[in-house]
Length: 609
Ligand SMILES: Nc1ncnc2c1ncn2[C@@H]1O[C@H](COP(=O)(O)OP(=O)(O)OP(=O)(O)O)[C@@H](O)[C@H]1O
Image 1 (cartoon, rainbow, N blue to C red):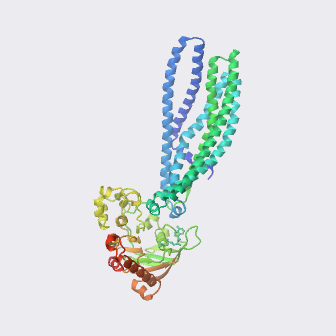
Image 2 (spheres, rainbow, N blue to C red; image 1 turned 120 degrees about the horizontal axis):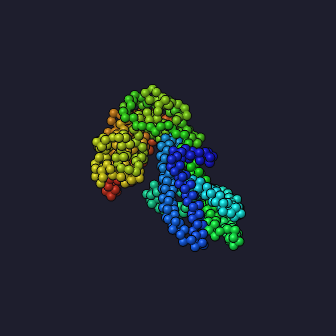
Image 3 (tube, rainbow, N blue to C red; image 1 turned 90 degrees about the vertical axis):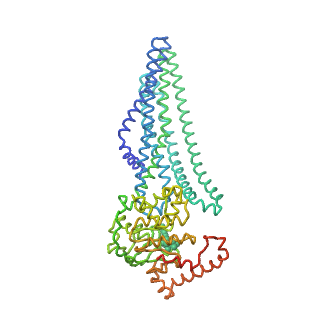
């Protein structure tokens, strides 16, 4: 998108506030008139003093008081409206950006770093807000002030006026040269800031990892590099601003001195009154001032337009839905889910992550997907949830291809329990309620009971209103998972997609989670990704996925008898678990409930599917 495009689009936001801009324009014109009045006032007061006209002072004093009141009110209105309009436009941009971001497909989030997005929501938004308020109005005010002052100077003495004006082109040229350098540099600073925000976003969100690996020094060094890169851009900015300011003021002072000498000479020769010379000095500042601040303002505007482009880039990214979806109040009827010859490769990836996938899941059936890492299990879920569209083949529910369904309609068939609990900052209530927006407290409590989470939640200081911290960091892994299950319970969708919700839990916690899952799965059709094969022995069908293909399918017994890939995986895992069991059995007491459970123990809590 060209700069003009960004400006025109910002214009649509500004046009929504025509009235404020109209008042701001009036205030600006009034402030220019007040500036000129000040020059006139100085001339009058000087002339009265030179002529020893005491009578004139009384009137001038009253005029001065009135002037101060009007100028004060005008300054207040000017500052208030500029800040106000910035805040309004920033707010609207933020909201529009958020609603579009929420509508973006998963592939967008795969490609773009969340820290970069964050930077667009914050730094860029701030910069654009400035442009629509202060920068914009100053860009209008300064040329108007220069023209008005020049007209007044012409009226006082045209020779002096032309001398003053001669500085204009020089200052303009300075501004153009330095303005370009400023724009190039500010793009660099913005990019550095965005990289730094991404880095901070990553490391601050995983404080336990960097502490556990003792990589604080390395992170500190990396951060110093990022921070230095911002600082170096900012130093360069200071250099450019300093040079622009120095050249502008040198040119301004030179012209000023020249004009002053000539004005003094005119006064000495009786061709100019002393008051007119004082007015001239004041007007000279008004004429030269804008030329020296304009380059900086133009550079700021360019920088903000760059920021606006980055915001509009997000808003222009193709969305997966036009209107943000609403949760369907009543869960749909479900009969059968069919996948026929499904094939899929991620955008930007040459390799196919799924190939020739065909399966049928009927109401009430419990299906498990197992297989080595990278086999395509999670990708299968992503396609079912409509995060990506298959390259070939078809997914249909109750005989209707999902391509003909709205996304919210498709997603209403599934309750998803992700591997990571997927909780967000806010209260327990906020998190659970996302399963059924608008749910009553009783429904939330019931879901918590069903998910074996009621008791621990009630023990928390503020119950369901307790803030759980970033991604639920104030809770244990098992507690997080039980909340994730409670959320799925509240959704009450016909198909449960469970992504190995029992991974990495201790014995006690796993029991609680498994119980919760069993209740969740009651009367539900289930598709579960399982890494621990001991937990899926009761599944109706087990699919073994490898390299994106289903290489085996059948019940636990059938697959063991077949002595194929499943039986290989099962026996390897059995051996590993009993080796771990033997290695740790001597320490059971010191471990408490955090130890690795035996295969038999696991089998006793198995039956999730
Ligand atoms: N967003 C992505 N972009 C590109 N390739 C991806 C993306 N996500 C996964 N892949 C690739 O797709 C393949 C299947 O990955 P998938 O996450 O489905 O495996 P998985 O069976 O769920 O693995 P695991 O058991 O480790 O979770 C892998 O080769 C992986 O590298």
